[in-house]
Amino acid sequence: MERREVPAVPAVSVLPVVPVVRRAGVGREEFLRDIYPQRKPVVLTGLELGPCTTKWTVDYLSQAEGAKEVKIHVSGVPQMDFLSKNFVYRTLPFDVFVRRAAEVKHKEYFLSEDERYYLRSVGEDARKDVADVRKQFPVLAGDVQIPEYFEKEQFFSSVFRISSAGLQLWTHYDVMDNFLIQVTGKKRVVLYSPRDAPYLYLSGSKSKVLDVDNPDLEKYPLFGKAKRYQCQLEAGDVLFIPALWFHNVISEEFGVALNVFWKHLPAESYDKSDTYGNKDPTAASRAIQILDRALKTLEELPEEYRDFYARRMVLRIQEKAYRDDYG
Image 1 (tube, helix red, strand yellow):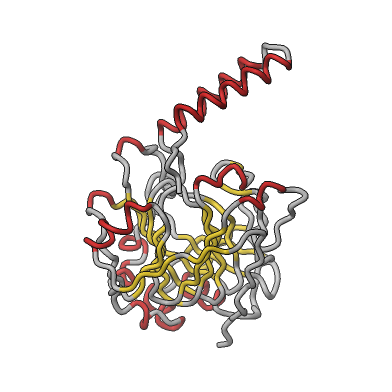
Image 2 (image 1 turned 120 degrees about the vertical axis):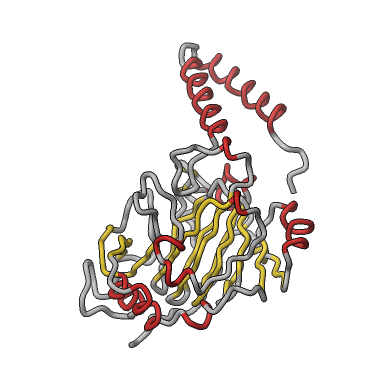
C-alpha cells in the first residue's frame, strides 16, 4: 500500500525559532528534580516504551483491534480549524480507517480522494468518560509502556491518536500536564509559552491564527511578538508539554501517538465534567465570570470614565496576579 509522506514543512516565523531541549535516558527522579520544575517543554529520548514502536505497522494495527467503529475527523484541507469547523465527523471500522489514513489517494472517500483523517480517541460516553487506551484499545495498550513519572492517582487520561500525513492541528492549550508519545511516524510541534497568550488571538483555549508558518500579520499584528519553540518528534520520542503551553502539531508522516494527561493540581481544582482535559480550572472559570460581570458594570459609565477605570483594573490585576520571575 502506498503511504502518504510529505517533506518537512519549512519553519517560517517572524521571530527566531527556539529549539526545544532534547534529553536522553531521563529517569523519573531526574525528570522530577531537574526538568519538571522548570515548566518548559522537553523532548525525552531513549525511553523504554515497549514493543509498540516496532509492532505498530498498518497491518498489525488493522488486525489488532479489528472492525470496531471509531469516530474520526475528515478534512479536505491540510490545516484543521476547530473554530470554523472546516472538517466533518464520520464513523468507520477501525481497520478500514487505519488503511485509509495511511493512503496517499483514496478510492473510497467522503470529501475528496486526497482527504486526510484524524482519530482522537474518546471514552465510551464522551460526555462522561475520559479516554483510556486500556479500555478503548486493550490489545494495543498491552504493547505500550507508559513512562511512570507521576503517581497513579494523578492519571487522568490516555488519548490514542492516528493522523494522516500532512495534517495540521489547530494551536491550543490544555489545562493538565501531558506526555505526547510519538509511537510511529514523525511530527513537527510548534509551541508558545503561556506568557505569550496576549499575542495568540485566543477564542477560548484555541488560537485564531491558523497558519503559524505564514501568519497574516495585517490581521494578527501582535502574533509577531510570540516566541516560537519548535521540535521534531521521531518514533520513540516523548514530548513533555506542561499545562497551559500552546501547541500546534503537524504530522509529517502517517503516524500513531499516545497522549497521557495527569493532574498536577489538587483534584478538586478541575471541572468534574471535563473529559478532554481542556476546561479551565474551576477557580479560573469563576474569576472570568466575575470579570465579565465587572466589565458589564463598567458599561454604566461614560466612555472616558469606563476607559479610566478599566485601565486601573488592568494595573491592579498586573500588580496582584502577574509573576515577576517569568522566564
